[in-house]
Figure (cartoon, helix red, strand yellow):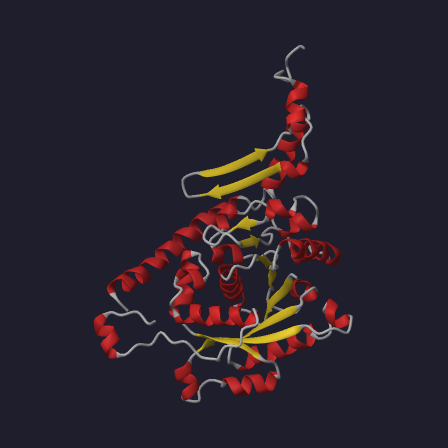
Length: 271
Length: 95
């Protein structure tokens, strides 16, 4: 049974697109058939982060409007063969998305994939509400920072009221993913700690992604961080989060790239 | 971080710069010509449809751009029955 997962946050720049690419790749590497769908019409970036920007022919709007078939718009990842991308349009605006059109595309994707992962635009306008409209589950990407937590709370409210499931009296399964977490700053009391964030949002935790230079490197080269450096701390954290989405019960750890002096002298990579 | 790791990290910003330059030059040039690929796709199907019956779904368009050359691949599946029915005749053949 296909699962439609929306990656959302309200606030911009917290890591939705990075998370969509990384979780999509991790689930695909676990053998799942995965489609990642960019809902940020007019400002698409998932293609760039996935390294597929030169291969875009048709997009979500073309499929919604019936100009192209879904099979013509889907781009297969060159590294993981069960991972596909449906890009957003760069030339249109969000008004080109209609609820019925999106419903049809999501329905067709459900028939072809195990996971349909919708990368939401920032904000709470049409693009964001349509990205979450047909979701079975949501990952709310949150930075341990006051404005991000406030926006996440707003988004949780929308997930509980504006989605198809909520209108039918059903539940959208919600998960918090903390990104850009700096354990040292948290230890010094400079950053909201995770218990506080979860307590405020009353939503369970899917994972903690540490702040890491590997995330910038991954977007520079156009690869999900789980593929660009699978042994890095953020990659391991995303793989754990993907395994939790698949139902595994894993202890919550915060992977680290920090190594001791001896490791640095010997030039060993963190395991 | 070992030496290879250092080199790799130094190397990624130029990669990002080059990828952006290629992408943005294409997007800026194409801003007025909206959906060029969609128009091409429609016109190619129309051109083929004048001569043989093809299913819209059996036309695949693929794109790959680089800084020096871009390729547009168009794959049209023509059923055997259509080929047989028309024999080897070209459209401008008087037969």
